[in-house]
Image (tube, rainbow, N blue to C red; front, side, top):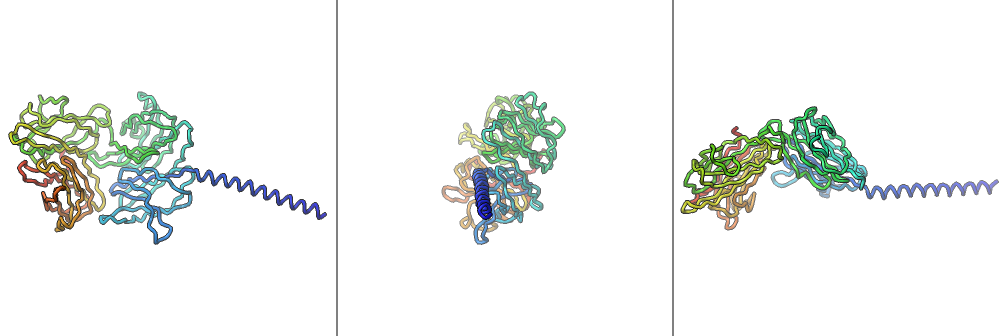
Length: 481
């Protein structure tokens, strides 16, 4: 009786070992699969009054530094970042204060990304009430012959949108892909055959186009996501659409593309030594100045009122040709050019240059600036334009604390070229502005004193009269339509 019992016991032992081996093999395969799995995350900043925000991974040891992962300005997304494993990780959201130090926003959270999943970390709301949301979508299998398209609603101005896409541009409204994507919703990504598609976004339940993505290439094993956000410009219900794919951050932005949405444009006259004193501006094709000018009698060192321009075609960035002449002199061209502009945006064109001593030859140029009006919590905005033809070398622009000597400070922007510009978010406070020659450190202008409050927006133009007298001209930013 004992021998059969022993054999039975030995048999059970080997059976158990075989099962353990099989199970271990399965776990090994799972581990291998897990090691090959793809996990990514991406940060999207839709906090309407935020500066740039940054995502960090909390260090395991409190004595160690947190680990930087990625960051994004408002209305932007980061590129995808790879995540090591699916264990819950503590993430921290930071901004950078005016001293260059990290400041936590008390938005710590734990998250683990599953194998072959992509995580979207979305920040929305305002700095006083930031809303953190997370969305996931599956990674595509390799060489499956299709890509994916998704839509993320983050606009309170346009709280519900539909997405249309087709390979037949004429029949785009015959093929709704998703409808009524509301604020704070992420439409499930849709599998689409690899192809070129015409893609439109519309007001939900209507064919009123709010964004034309044009022809979008949906590649195999790639995901394209559109996010609709608010913008802050000449129209109260403006939106901006950002486009993301697996290979890049959101480097594609377009404002609302309705044909009935205007853009706003003004000119600033920095033409030194102009014997005619003022200039006229025409918006006509081919330099036609036979009609009345659109802007007339624009004096030196002054800005025109903003004018609204409409365009009938559906180009994403319609071109506008302009001609500048001395006031009342239609046949003498100071400058001609073409501007590629975006509907719903606001621009200033700074015309520079100078006549020679004989008042016979003129060298001209222009700087096109798309203006920013978005308020940022605890910050104001300073814009600087270099338009001084007498000082047409590089200059340094200083924004110093009140009464701080230039020698003790650091240039906020160094090597600013002639007819170029900068836009700076500055914490509120009292400042002195200086313009200094990059080559020899000569102080050209300053101090220009400014009391910068939250939400204020100043533009300063560095000009001269052609005779060696430089100035820093402040111009209004309020729209005058």
